[in-house]
Image: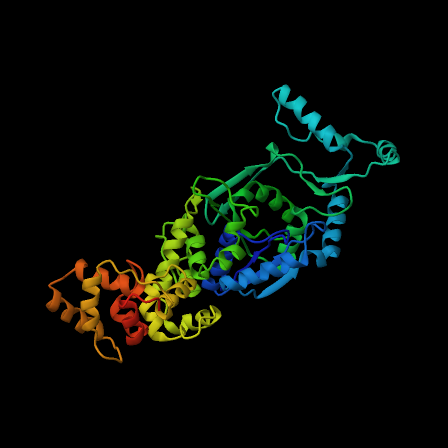
Length: 451
């Protein structure tokens, strides 16, 4: 039995805006599918929209994917493959599958309204196929330029979807799609098929909003004589109230999430596991996440993205983060003295994001304003403060001495000391924090001084 060819998958965003977490889902599903199967991942920029595509957005896409840990095996730009697209266009024209149409958008809109008024489906009626060469010449003499439609066969296109199972599209219910604009430029559909075929893409993994497109694209693959790849249409991420994600939701852009201090592993975990039969949980590495990717276990229901869930997953990853992984991030916070394993281990369980460590370093190094709720109690505690240097056993020894001297215990013992030492009523374990604060600063705070 011949060995299966390693899959080649692709992620093909348009460089017309920043990627958001909804885009992260197909990017990661493709990348992780290839990693699990020993295949390759192609990043192809679908930049045929010349007016809206920019180099800045193209660079941002590569940066955002790199932040997630996605490093493409192959890279291409559709705008550099125009000769192949033009050749496919001429091939389809020669076959009679691509035909010129001259209606304006206003004329088409009026025609659709008339069809709806008569109870007919609002699909294109192929009136352009009846035009003679003289008719076309007359229209062009008026200054009209044709757009070109692909003539669909009125058949049911069926395939076995790797997510949805047996699927089909009745192409008789669709309008012949426009593949070429009036200015001669190609819309998304034709370049996508040509590039997928010529680049050897074996699996197209994308959102379920492309299911209908698949019926059209399968016909184009076949018309051009190409093998049809496997398809997988996954559910889409939505907001908690069911709204679709889009580029206009800037706070959910990958760039915005990165700047807000979220871990890429938190974003990847939520983007991939939401809406699957796997429990949503923090997964620290892409290798581990790849082992969980099973297209057949993706739900058909919408996958609701909850930012609060992202906060929880992020916090769990930070709580488990070793100091070696946090070191560079602490350096970037520009808080001298905080880049120490003892500090990280003391505060990480109280962080939602690595950047939150800066606030706890200010608590350690000061100045802070102590909260003295019971001056007499704190004064007595101060007289019992052990001599330095402080270590991991200092807090226990000191609080036991204060307990014996004052009779205070539990919250009545610990809370006044915490408030005096940190100015807060919550925070990291003081057994770990006290050695970082040190004896001199502790004594001054217990005396009510800002230190």
